Every structure is written in structure tokens, then in C-alpha cells.
Amino acid sequence: MGYLSRHSALDRPDNAVVLFELDDVTMVRDRREVLADLRARLPEGASCVAGPSGCGKSSLLRLLNRLADPDAGVVRYRGHDVREHDVLELRREVCLVPQLPALLDGTVADNVRYAGRLWDRDPDVARLLDLAGLDVSYAERPASRLSVGEQQRAMLARALALDPDVLLLDEPTSALDEQARGAVEATLTDLRERVDVSIVLVTHDLEQARRMSDWVLRLDRGQAVQQGPAHALLPA
Amino acid sequence: MTAGIDVSLGQVAAALALVAIAIAVSFWQRAGLEEEIGIAVVRSFIQLTAIGFVITFIFDQDELVLVVALIAIMVGFGALTARHRARTVPGALVPLVIALAVAATGTLGLVVALGVFDPEPRFLVPVGGMVVGNSMTASAVALNRLGDEVHASARELEATLALGATSTQAAAPIVRRSLRSGMIALIDSTKTTGLIFFPGTMVGMLLAGAEPEDAVRLQLILLYTLLGSVALAGLISVALAYRNFFTPAHQLREPPEP
Image 1 (cartoon, rainbow over the protein chains, first blue to last red):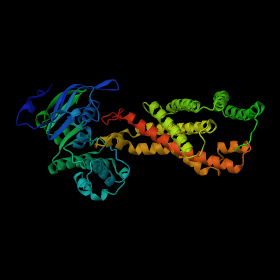
Image 2: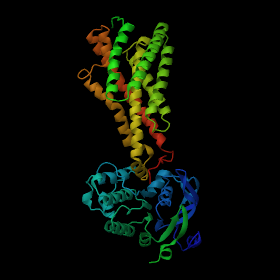
Image 3: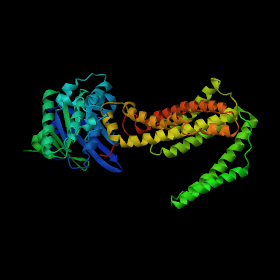
Image 4: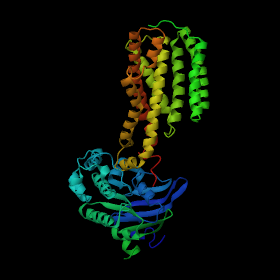
């Protein structure tokens, strides 16, 4: 199982509350097992799911808010099978920001308001853009004319309009250069200081996992090879 | 409304000269359509001759139940043909059957109820055929577009579902565009009718010796009827078929490529 046994760290009462538990989760896609009898825990706070391309990281992320269901096994959120939650409320509470930008036609503000309208909310666009590291002048810009990095920030602002408890971030910096990557990491760190939100970040970059998370789950070929506190698993 | 007209088989055979031109063009340009043209000519001859006998039988019997049976068969064949064009839409047959059946019964029922046509086989059979045919084309175009759009926009759809949108909310822009593409051809042809082309019914009536005023009025009735039926068929087929791309838990059945 790796550095720590499956339960040791999280079973301690002083440890963070377990957000997600995956028990014997198997997922098959295109006749290939992308997750195989996976057992893992992700606590509140900042977690990273790290591993090489094709190891099943993004598939795992999509199970956490039921964009997909496993072929076998159980995924629990706050102790309850995700299938027992209202699926739409689960997605509001556990909001996924995909790897590649996928904004709707219209301005950045239109996108943020769209997300708010889904939940009868009138979002404070300027504040949400600020949290996502975008100047308020971006509000009226057409979403399709932004750079990839700016679109990803707009996606983050849109997700924050739902007032989520957990943000699932699928490789948010994979399409960015080093400078832009650093800026996004700073935004996420700043976000966690200003908003009470847990983060599950998928990355193939172990250095990023060390910088950005308290807890790391390392995957390889659909199985957990290590999971535990980031400072212990990935020392500087 | 119309005067009688006799058309001999010899006249039909003479028209084959035009088919010879089509085959010659295909052969000359190596378009490879000679066989297709041949099949089309033979099939159209057999199918129209057969339907001519069927219609004669139904007119002679003057029984509405036979009209219903004929339109039901048209709906079945129309749905099968449209499904062939909407291959990327899973389970498209049932939505198509429902869409064509509702379009046919709804519009025919309405034109009879409004007193536009008498409930007689002589009116219901040809109008029903046009309604089903146009509805089939519109539904096929709309579902074809729906399938293409869902596959091309899978990332946007899933990103919207990830915000807690229902599948209906996520698919709404695609449903709108698909319905629009199904209806736009008939709307455009209705706009330009009389300017750029003469529609078939009007041409047929004029050839049969009807007064132009009668031909125009009947054509207008048919165009307006077809607009209603095409809108109904397009809406119902798309509104039922888009659901097949999603699970009851508002997940895409075929998620985007990673």
C-alpha cells in the first residue's frame, strides 16, 4: 500500500475529517480498467491526486461528484454513498473544474451568472473574479477571446459562484507556462486563505503536489501506490 | 377544384430522356452515380405505381380506417429512414415514431377540425403523405445535428453538468440549434416560394388544368400545414431523443475524451 497503511493516518481522532472514501472501486472505460480495486481516502483541506498520464487520476475525480459511476465498489462523501446524495446538490457542493476550459458563449460575467442562476443565486461577479485572480475588467469580455489561462480562471470564478464546499481541480495548470502556473498556484493558495473550501487537485507534477497540498494520493495504473501527509510522502 | 388529366405510360417513358442526361453527366464527370440514378428511377417507378394502386383502392373503399393504416405505415417507414440518417443518436427510432405520428395526427386532425379539408381519403391521403415526408426530413436533419453537436460539445456539456445543471439545462442550447436546423430549410423555401421556385402541388394542379387562384390557395394551405407539422415533429423528436445521451443521474453516457 505504500508509505502509510490505508487507515492509519486518517483513523486518528485528531486528524482531519474524511471527505471522500473509495472502497474497492473499479472503473472500466473502452474495455480498459482505468481504476482497479482502488482503496483511498481524501481528507478535508488540500489534497492532491498525483500520478503519470493515464493512471486514472481524472477518472477518479469524476467519480467524486458523480459525473461518472464506478463499475464496482463504493464512493462515499462525508460518510455516505454518493448515490444517496441528491446528485445535483452533490455537484453544487463538490464542484469540478475540468482540465480544458469549456465556457459557454457570452461574456465572463454571463458565465458566472449562469452558474449562479442554476441555483437561484445572484453572484457578486467582481468578488468572484477577484478570488479567481481576474481583474473586474474581464467581466464584460467575451469568454471565447480569453487566453487558456484566463479561461481557466473564469472557470474557477464560475465554479465559486456555487459557493462549493469542495473544488475538484483537474490539472488546472497543465496547459500553462511556468509563469502562468505559478500565478494560478498563488491564486489557489490565496483562495484557500479567503474562502472555507477544500480542494482536490489532480496533477502529474509531484513538485506541485508537494507545494499545493496537505495530503497526497499517488496513483499508478489505476491503483493507490501511496497515500498520506504530503510532508511525509514528498519531503522537500 | 381540378380538371381531369390523362397521362400515358408513353409520356412517362419520354421523360426518361432527362434521366439519360443525368446518367450522361455522371458518366462524363466520373461521378460514379450511374447505378444510384438507375436504382432511383426503378424504385420511384415501382413505389409510385404501387402507391397509386393502394390509393385507388383506398379512394374506392372510402374508409377512414384504411387512411389511418396507410399513414401508420408511412410513419413506420419514415421513422426507419430518418433513423438511418441519425445514426449517432442512440435509440432514435422511438422518438422518431412518436414525432411523426403526433405530427401526422395532430396536423391532419387540426386541418379537419378547422374545416380546411373534409375528412375524406381524397384529401387526407395526399396531405398525410406530405406531412409525414416533410416531418421525416426535418426530424432527420434535426437529429443528425443533435448527434453531431453532442459529440462535438461533450466537454462543454459535462462542464455544465459539473455545475449542477440538469441534463435538460445542459442540453438546452444544443436542442435549440438542432430544432432550428431541422426547420430552417422549410422556412427558407416557404419564404422564397413563388419567387425562386414553384412548389410541387401548385405545379401539379396547374398541369392538371386547375385555375391558378385555386392552385395558389391550396398550395398556401399546404405550406402552412407543413410548417406546423415540421415544427411539431422536429420539437418532439429532439426533445425525446436528447435524453438518450444522458443517464437518469444527469451523466453523459459517452463522456468526453480525456
